[in-house]
Length: 308
Image 1 (cartoon, rainbow, N blue to C red):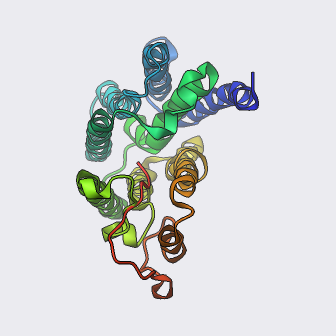
Image 2: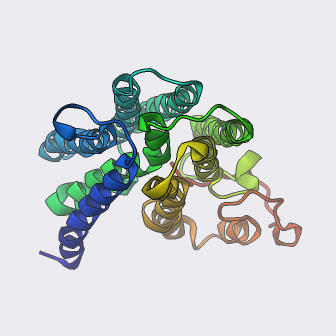
Image 3: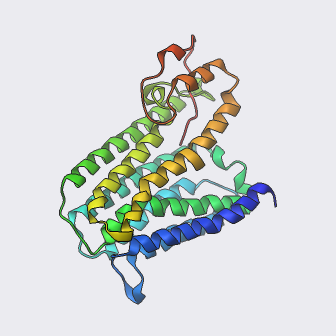
């Protein structure tokens, strides 16, 4: 067992315990079904169970083909389960459910189409042959589903409903802004990659000229919107579910998103002056105009396999 596998062996129970703690906090003041099981807790169980179930097939086949699709479908399935078991739904619950399902459906279909076209995902090249490392990835995805949906789940399953107001309006606008950024960024990269002349190059136009990871910025922003909509219904330990956008930020910027893609970019283009200039002038996450003094003198267009 190497160091990476030992790390995974330690991390897996930590991830599960984090999920248990989040489920307990989100369940406070929430609807309870048969045998005293809170709906929020059931959603947490389903989030992990679905990912572990698909992991069995994925590891036996040594494939990451269904990873992102499973994440999206789990998102949609968990939020649908909450909506069904919550009973009578208010307008806030319907808005939150719609936000989660629309986002999950679009992202899952986009990423699944991409991996079908490209055949593989470089994030899993090394880890899919390791039982513990691959299991950690799927377990983290279960936690990702639970924590990103946490504030929405708490608001949907709570017994304390509040009429819609300014928070709902502001949160919806923030969600629409973030969702729009993510969709535009994904479409720009898809169009870029469709051009054979851009094979093995990095994108640096459109939103990608203002941010190296605009789709991640969009995703983090839309979860902030969800948390804002959910906020008025929360109380006590339920406030802990506001970790949703914080977790999305940490996951994408510190764990599985930007660090992995930055490493891959450095290995692939780090020796190129054009790539170094792109990194120097371009914001890592928050979109802003590029630093004009860093523009390189080039004669041909280029691109970057930034994020997912």
